[in-house]
Length: 332
Image (cartoon, rainbow, N blue to C red; front, side, top):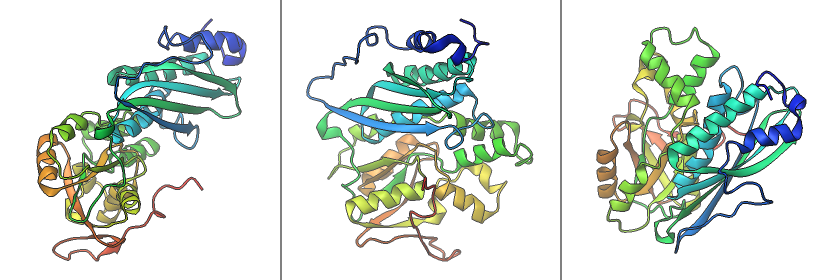
């Protein structure tokens, strides 16, 4: 088998042998994998599909980064539930002409992300397709009392974003249009591009949350579909509204020196794929959490009674706006 060959040339068995070399040896080889769940914990299951031309492309995402992003997107859903990762299964659909070298780099990126966060690849499936598609199921575990849900936000809670938003969208812009952002330092450009190609699921937040004394369970979800989307989804599920402070949004400092203020705000609210956590919890606990996290973490607003989610600035420098789910990325 040579990396210069295509998957059509090495055939199904050759491709199967290649991808199984990246899997945990004691979990593959049968019709299904056997996983042991820690005692007194619940199984957490999430799935996601990434399609060439929709979620990644050779223009912006080399195969190693595509693999990392595919794993990170699924692992982030586990972090948003308060869970620790156990394993991923990967169903890979490929055209016959796809190179073996591309598949190797994809799996190297996938397994690098899994190893970073303590997960293993536990098998999956292979299929021929006119378009590359990566369908992943992520499995994790959590003690039921520590599980994070979207439905527990209460009026008066502070809303916390655990890090910068808009960085991934900015990195995508730099990849699509290399001539953009010429005023940015090389380190700043690299940082934004890395935010897009190699996002980091926020498992590091969970120990800080567990150490807090809380009056009620925090509400949580990840911001993969955008900061505004996360706040709106949390509010809808919890039956509450929110008031966001435009001056407190965790906008990467690079955006202010590069973009018009309207564009920077749009990318911060709706850019997506930053894979941070958005949390609703009592204000005292929120302040303690933000102080512990640092590095872009911020209290961005407050949960209110009612159902409307608004954005304003305390000094009235910008008109109040109502946030909606229709402005972010929509598949259909």
